[in-house]
Image 1 (cartoon, rainbow, N blue to C red):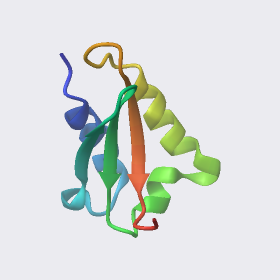
Image 2 (tube, one colour):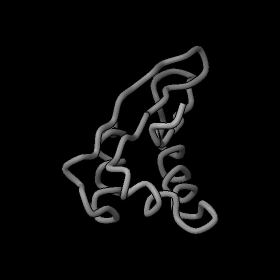
Image 3 (cartoon, rainbow, N blue to C red):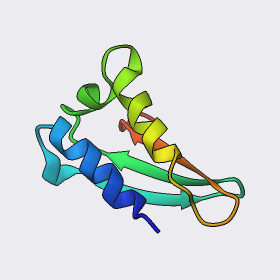
Image 4 (cartoon, helix red, strand yellow):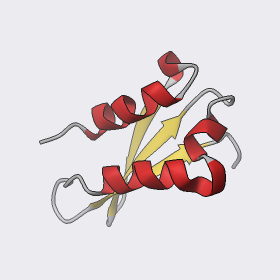
Amino acid sequence: MVSIDGLIKKIVSPLVDYPKQIEISHNESDRFMEYHLRLNEDDIGRIIGKHGHVIQTIRTIVYSVPVEGQKKARLIVDDGKQ
């Protein structure tokens, strides 16, 4: 089975200025396996992209990877605003 953490890091690392600050945490719910992506605040705009096109493309790739059971993957960019 593919490591989704590794996949996310492999996709995101070349796009950011601070790849060593990439952190991924997990949260599991009844329907989703959520992957929370934390970056340096200067890199958040790079990952989101104009009109959200970059993050949407990354999510499409991540969502296509099968997850255990019937759950679906979900990628969330934590921007520090709650």
